[in-house]
Length: 501
Picture 1 (cartoon, rainbow, N blue to C red):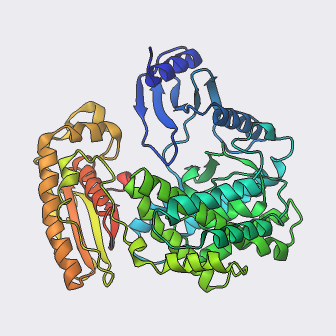
Picture 2: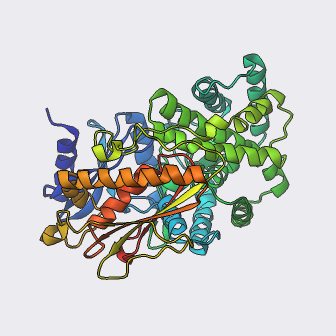
Picture 3: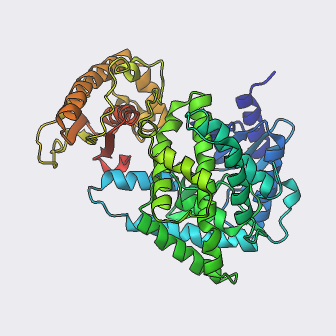
């Protein structure tokens, strides 16, 4: 019996006439779908496998409808419903979230990047087109699991939050009183007109950026619903952590664009907008709890503090004062529970790799008083060794030139340390693993001391000949490890511009 990769390869051959040259499984996400990047003479495409046949049908149907309307979504190239696989056009690897993270890590200024703001505006220009224009003649019969974001859907989300976050995080509440408030919140939200297309998961990780233009994916959970939900989903997107002034600016921009194609009463819109913001954040907390507490995927717990900060803002600015006393008491309890801001995470990457296990027995302490910024850089020895601009001087400089060099091989010369073939090459070398383990241990000693002494900055630099392969790989590994730690702000910079983080 063929495995999934073989089935997808066969579908590629049926579509293109030739077998793919390479099939690489892509990193997983919060769903149970699996994706593969397939390279061949016909170019690069994405193969997808999803055992949920009804979800696949929804995605295929929506994609065909959106493409006919000229909307920026991937093209459905081939479909094999029996094997629950399909091929779509490759939109690359750059999500809006990744671009935002890159811009922030490369900037020392606390200013929201103007170029990122423009992409958000472009996305919010397209959103009303999907919601209003694309809603017409859309086949809502294929929606899954429900055709509308109705009371049943809302209660599913709220109970998801209750059972997978509140109970697992041990937040006390009066169950019947909370159920009553859930019902009252649904009453409020159902006052909004809901005859529009609702993406369901309209957030920065589901917006691809191609040539500075937004493209949209992951709309298979779409259904009929209110206009407010998707814009609330984007603007309260947890780890994107948009400044509140930026959120308000973008909300007003969206309302302006919406008003150009659909008459909207702003006062009525805002009456329920923050209620939809609340239910979206609670649903996200349920997802973090399910993945983190229940499935033990601890990196999902790292998103909890961002959701709590959003709730704190809404609560302190009277945005969600709907008379839901029990629910608000639960919100207050959550945002005041300090332990929720310091979730201990297991290694995000390969837990079997000694380099990522190096500090497991000596974790960085969770001290609330200090936030240490660790600046991790890769560089080329053909250029100047990076200088510490924080004013502290010093830091670590690790020389990667003694490690096996992928740059000596033709197949790697046009790649860098973030590309999977280079990662595979270096991760198999025991000398690289030993080198990382030793550097991690040195950095860990300083991290613990710096936090205990209240220092705010530490710089770590990895250098190799060209700043392309080994140094980039090592810097990525250290940054990924440090990001699993509480009270550390990691800034990752690759100084050779072609290999930006």
